[in-house]
Image (tube, rainbow, N blue to C red):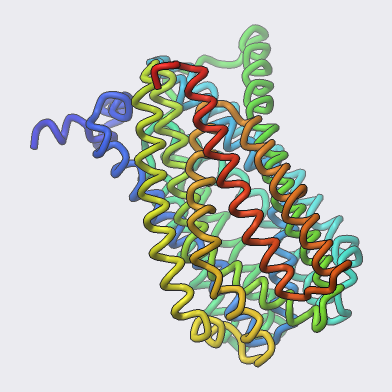
Length: 470
């Protein structure tokens, strides 16, 4: 029992924090302690989107399509924040692993300051692009009007959301994932609770409207960041001197490093979101476009809740573990952590895929009352056993590479498979061949298999270069 306590990452006092437990503790325990808080975090956080999709369905399929497209735009506007998070994890984790806690704190501080600037910019960007984005999609008028309003209000929450991403990245990278768990638990509880309360209220202009979802998201994200700020300050202050001319120059260099590492991750996410945009656009060439868009939004929300968000949590856990161990020059241990989490994620992906396939129609029926939307959604979910396992493999292996600071290989993998395979194949099958929904499903599955294959190759090549013995 005493040995287990010695590897505990967090105790009551800041002075008792064990920053090195990720590189010195038993690997199986490290994987578990890093994984379960993040897994719980993202399972809970994914419920926000699922509840939003359900409540939007009570308004109609146009509202569901508007929420689906609007959320893609939100991801696009805060894409710089995801790149910053990748850079933060790599720099903080490697510094902690190398034993330079002071440098880790400085990276964390610079990331937080930069996230506030990026957050403000994304607020204005989201509001300014709401109308042009929906015009680009050529969405039906009702979908466009709902989506523009939803996006304009939700964009206000971009500032606290971006700061929360920075805080969360720092907590994960420093081996303190439970702080990230509490942060997102607060945001999730307030967002979902507020959505349900406002949506079913009799407040004029808010009850039974998408504004209820937007306002709740803004409130939840803002309160979550306010509550988390003292945790961040308590853990990451103490040895940081006041800014002077030399420290300002050093801070600028650190910010450039964060951006340099984060930029490829930004591009990778941009490609992912952009490919989703193009898919929604290409759906216009398919019969019943609004119903197809709504079905795709629902299916992706179900996959997100059941698989993508939990897998993303595992990906973030392995990024921190690999980053810290490479900082400590424990190359074999870093590679083994990636291998173990990949095996676990693949096994879980197979199981989840089978469950989603078996309950495809009940899940679709629970999310929509439109018969055609239910049919389309079920046809997508039936293919979950083919689509989820390769997603699991690619997220874990590419997450390990990002934690190592090697963000260019994941970027290339996403660029090749999402644009060169998914979008191109979807265009050929939908616009040229006229294969309809079946063509979209084929393009989806083929792109997932392609990115999985490239991820395996990239992971093996990276670690062989670090150490031929691996």
